[in-house]
Length: 177
Image (cartoon, rainbow, N blue to C red):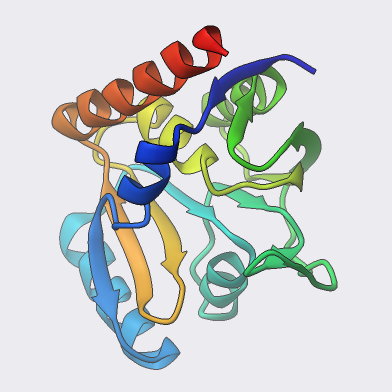
């Protein structure tokens, strides 16, 4: 397993803050606001990162093209969430890292015109960065913000550049170790 990126202590603190628009509230409130955003913005692609947000979207008849899950919630193992996709794949991605295997799986999933579920052995959180970098512009990347709500990242050139800088810092940290 090749580690492509490793989280720095400084970035760990920074990434606790949402990298997109935080929608605060209950499940019903956040989904209602998210549906409104979807109707107004009409994203080219929808990607969900996280078990609960993926389950909640599907339960609300919102079907992401790419779902990334790790069968964990707040770092606790859960029963796998039943999420159907045209293709399923599994990757290894230890906490605090992004592996080459996970990076490639995201890139491949975004190239095809079918729904894909990536099940991560390890942790899926940092894959949000890779998804933003490789998703088509005007896509929505959605993830949960524990105890607060959901975060919607609209993929733009500016957001891609912001994420590229974070990944560059992670790559330099990995090489320095």
